[in-house]
Length: 405
Picture 1 (spheres, one colour):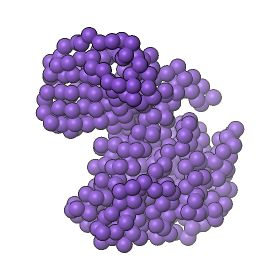
Picture 2 (cartoon, helix red, strand yellow):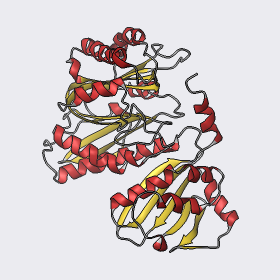
Picture 3 (tube, one colour):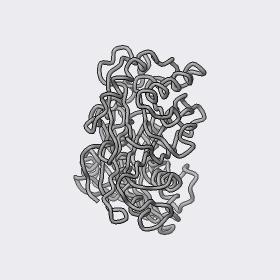
């Protein structure tokens, strides 16, 4: 397996585009994106578990339920959430407009939105932009599409890999947006994955759900699960591999490649948290099982007090033990050890339930690096898990204090 260029356009059969159509007043960059396959695809998706779901989420859940899709249209600047019948009709009109331009069934178009909650979306701007959006589709369109879905993101997020599946080169590409309102649970802010692997919708859904549990669902920036979280995968089957119909060695190879791109994207999202200065990775080993390890790791990186400590370069390990203690997971505090690691070195601060004397200056040096790992070792079993987050800074409050106005 190796990395390649092209993002969502890297797999065979996929093109993309991004344009500016003026959805949000004052925005001058691209705000409407489209990813399209030249053939109908096997499709699967996971969505937010928030009971308050945006109107495009409701529509896309309905459209993808049959396991097929051919295009995904995404907008930034307006979440189209809590907008009722008018908002739902806007999502329908968006799907219909793209379908008519591409000559495909309306139900094969999935719709995603991100931005401010509770404002009716400028559907006239979207409909006026759809013709140019569709005619401008190209193999290089990933560069415009990845920009069009950004809101408070400081960097675009995409990656692609090629791996051998069933003796054939199979490609997986992806793009995502996510910076704030992120406490992922069955999806991310917005993400589209494309692949030319031949795989049934059932197996595609299985692989996506398996991968999400160990990657996207292990990310938290601020503890808020969005109304719009959507993660979609389309498979064109143009790679020529024997169709994956069951969990075999081909399925395992595909899942390994999918995990690779999803892990990379999870790290990118966590590292680009609103106002963040540090990417935090928490690894838990020795837990009673992997699920417990992941839950403990995510609880640690979700703690506002832990996040604030890392912003201050303060090795306040007590906050880590505290967060683990209210996680609801069973572990033995007396068998717990904690250390920190970064490019500046490693430092142990807590060992088998007992605090250690450590050099505060060295600890601060370790925590000053842009990427810091929290290592937690338990004595309860062989389970392991990793989660990703970021520090909590003054800038986060500035960004979100007047986000709507």
